[in-house]
Image 1: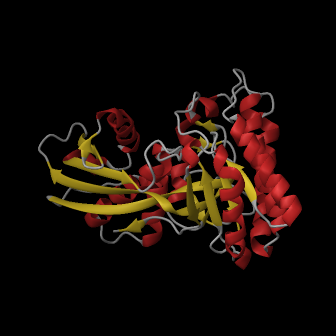
Image 2 (image 1 turned 90 degrees about the vertical axis):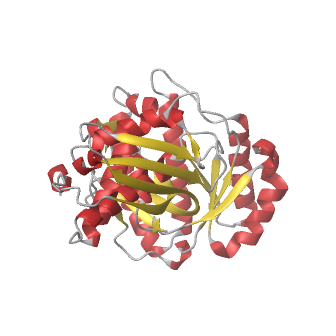
Length: 358
């Protein structure tokens, strides 16, 4: 499919209404770092969809006379949130060509997160995915003949234009975003469900998120992505991501936990290595991030329990492990890792299945 396939040509035939969706955050196993114009990824990525860390968004719409521009109110937890509005305005302008009917309505967007605000979990992925699901519900109401496949692909396509990784928060427990020769149907334009059967070892996989630093990052992800344009190791990194996605596809099919750990931890450290070797260079890990990593390595080496870590572009640590070792790992976290978390805070989550119509 091409961008042109997502241009809607519909009359705004409905006066008013509302929809409500939840969409989860996700954690990449093979990382996306670096992008081209129009939110196109420089390399493919694959992620676990989370279950409990999600955004719930309600979209109310009412027809208006002036159709020249967008009109919307933005509420966060029921209260006006003016500082979020520029990001939503920019998103609506980006998708205007694909959803021209939106200018016919005044929109009221009311959103909330199930995880604490400023918890260090990126809410842009879940937030943009939830908003895109609502917009597609409106489009489907205007075009009832729309297929389910098109509905989800366009929702992922729109979400990507709001926040790249948001396209991986729409549908599926394991999602691939970016063209890859081994993944049927993969695309730079939207995320697709992992096409193969996932081994039982990875069913209901656990993600305990250790909140090392809840402060705002000193370097935004957008700036970090842009620094890949002239990065001395960019091409090697993009090739490595293709190779690692090829490897992890087989790993997810066969259930090889040892190889899974190698790829996932290597990807996390490579992501941060790219930040440390860009110009300007920066470090988002904190001393406690490193302490946690070393403790995980020591625990895994001593117990042979298949627990590993991954990182986003920040200081917090995602501890990944199979469901059958949950008691041992949680005890280890409480005994040895909570002291490295800000105010001892952590969040327990697991693999989910994507956005839900509420």
